Image (cartoon, rainbow, N blue to C red):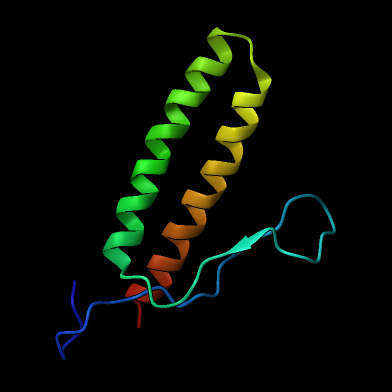
Length: 89
């Protein structure tokens, strides 16, 4: 997972998350320079939280937990997408 010079692959900082149709301002973006493995590890942790929030939100009938899971899953996807871009460079 390292480049030929021994430097780790890092995020490129191109992934943005927009919420809602026709939105032009991103809610968040991934910073460049995060080691790809760290970004992937964090995305995995977030997806674990998403799973827990989703189950709790359904079982306890708390829609705010489902919305939190929705946004956390979008953040996890953005991390994974940007890490993937970084792995290609």
